[in-house]
Image (cartoon, rainbow, N blue to C red; front, side, top):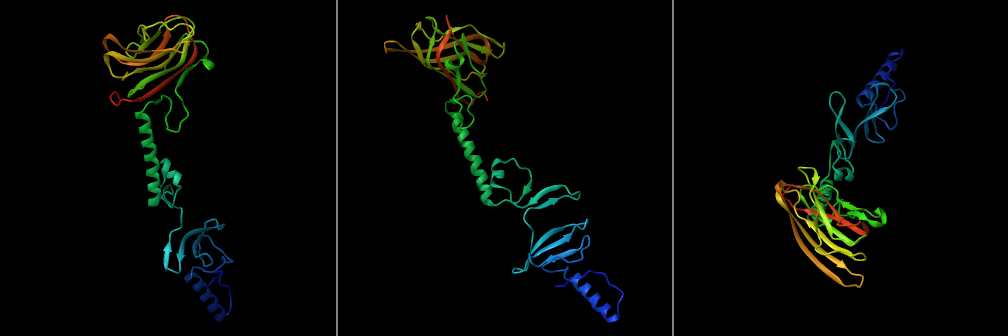
Length: 300
């Protein structure tokens, strides 16, 4: 190990030879030592024996650039972690290092880098779990606005405590690949009336005529519970079915079940864009309505 200022002064022959030998030894040993050379030059090499790091001085002669680790026990050269891979223009194209497990799990990073099998497995497990959960969610009845199993959305499209009295309840637009169910929870009207529905046609961008969902009049003081299912609304056909299972609760506590299957038909094939509910007279003044959906795997 040797270091030198690499400046040969005028001196006697023996001193000159000694100074020259010192400079050559410093060059041969890459100015190795536990501390940096006292005299430093731009682009000079220095092997830092205290850290076993080979370094090169930057062109501004203001700092050292780490080149690699010299493993003295294994007699091997080691590439330093997080070494950037660049093209001939200096633009980064990769990374010789590790990235966080979260980066691999989200799959949004675009930097090429080293990755352990454990992180690959963690990323696959994480995304597979999300996919399986989403598939399970999609294949069962779930709130139309919920996109993850852990989501808090409940599919509510009408709540009298929030929306007050309304003349009609219109659903959000249907998506291809789903069938829809509407659940009525103690929904009441301001007048004795039958519950009706209108289907919105995609081809004409307009609503068809109202049709009854309950075969009897729901009087003031009565509420309806139950479901209305619209199967495969995005499959083009002449007739679209509505499956109704509604219970009317009486003020006396007696309940009647009304199960009606309706079919709405027009003269050309059509798809349903959304649905609107209304009473044959009066308004909705109490209760909640929820909208659910599940995959049907035909129209998407």
